[in-house]
Each structure stands twice: as C-alpha cells, then as structure tokens.
Image (cartoon, rainbow, N blue to C red; front, top):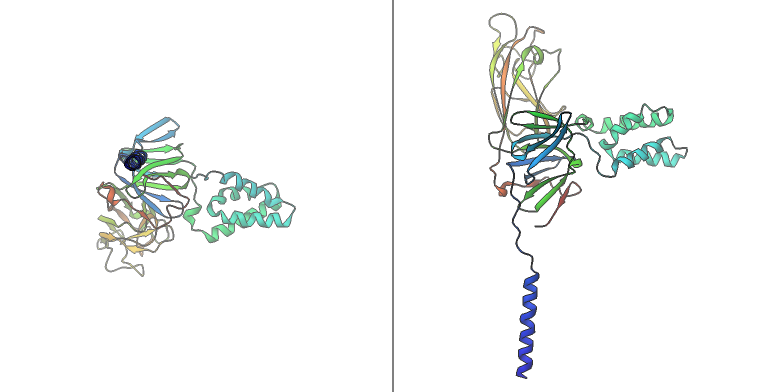
Length: 349
C-alpha cells in the first residue's frame, strides 16, 4: 500500500514537472525604435503604437532610402489595393458590359460596396471604347462622388516620407508596419489599409507663411493646405503673428485677429481662419487657437476676405503644434473601436 502511494506521488510530481516545462517562457517586448506614432487607417480609425522596425524603406527614382524609424516625422501613403481586391474589381468592371442584365446589376451593386477602392478603376472604365460599359461606369462614378467625401476620392500613386531634414517621394514596398502596444503585444498593420503615419514626439511642430495676395481676396476661395493631419481627438495649438494691410494706404492694417472695422459677415476681415477637411466647418484661429477642432482630415487655413479685392498685402507666420505623447507604452491606445477588424493583425504576447 505504501509502495502504491509513493508511485502515485511520484507520478503527480512528474506530471507537474511536465506541465511546468511546457509553460511558455515570458517574452521580452520588442524594443521601440523611435517615439510613439499615430497611424490613421482606411476606415477612419487610428492606432497609437511604437514602431519596432529599425527603418522605413522607400524606393525613389534615385535609389532606395532606409530612413531610421526615429527620424520619421510623417508618412503619407499612396493608393494600394488590399490583397485580392484589385483582381475582383477588374473582374466586376468587365461585367458592366455583360449581355446578361442580372450579371450587370450584380456587378454594379458589388462595385458600389467597394466604395473608394473601386473609384480609380471606374474612372478609367468611364472612358472605355465599349459605350455601354463606359456609361454604367460613369453612373457609378457619379454615385460614389455624391456619396463619399472628396478627400476619400483623391488618390496618389506614390508615398511621401517626411523626416526632420527632407521629404522623400517614392514607393514603400513593405507589406506591413511592425509595432508594439502593451495591450496586444506585437502588431502588424497592413500597409494597404494605412493612410498616414505621424510621429507623436513632443515638440513636433510645423511653421509656415500665409500670404494676403492669395488667401485674403473674396474672389479667390483657395485654402492653404498645411499638410497637417488631424484625427478628431488630438488637440492642436496654432499660433499666428504678423501684419497685413486690407487696402493700400494707412489705417487698414491688422494682425491675425482681423480688422475691427471691417467684416466678411461672420469674422473680422483679415482674421486667420481654419477648417479640417475640404468641407469642414470654418473656425476662428486669430492670434492663438488651442483646442480640438471638429472633424478629421488635413488642416486648411485662409484669411477672412477683404472688402477690397486685389489690394491686400502682407503675411502671417503660423506655427502649428500637435499635443505630443511621452514615449511610454502606457500611453499607446487603439481608438474608435474599429482598428482590430480587418485593418490590424494582432499577435498574442
């Protein structure tokens, strides 16, 4: 009986040893290669994480550049099809000229479901030599233009990588971006689903000049593209200085607050204005703006127009600073809830 007990205890101890031997060893989190970054995805959601790849490689007309991850300040990604999507869209576009009515209607419905991904192919097909196919493609182009924001229908074939010293134009061939968050461990983002990347380093800022001759006249409705992307949940600080004259002569000078005696109906003439996105709501910047404007997209600036067309002179110097994040893993989050659907491949720690 005593022998049986000893055998049972020995077996239990052996099993415990086996179980413990099979337990996974704690893994060391990948080492960040630069400051935190915020990445905007195709569905409008965003991911904040640390890049763990040492470089961002871009092929240019002058050769391949390997930019250290820590020196990347911004990346604007050109158009890409997710894997398998291009072939499907090409096949659907060809069906627009099918003799079978049901196949044509089915193709039109499926192409609309692809939204902006189908737009480039449909624009090309709208000029097809097949008149019927071209007609249906043009109808779909019109529907997409009515349904989607103009910014979603702008496509660029190349990528732009901006560093502290220069901007490189070319094509990033990597299929994924490698990163890390404390909540999900290693993260792989499909480049085809990424629209932009920006560094969250403290002190990151953009300085530019906005000139009165171009952005003050009522006849010119142009807005200055600052190339600063806002995600709708990140505060921005804008400071402006300088002086302009609404009219050639004394008494018409003003700063970024605008001239108190003249107005465009809503804001003092000459006042610095901003909006987010091409169709965003206009807001007053003045000498200083510190807040979170509505909407997501690029920040645009102009001046409240002058009563005297063609008479404005002078300029404002504008500094744009986004709230940074200290390089601590605890501050990386995934926001807006959609990032982990099809856009992100998560690997357990």
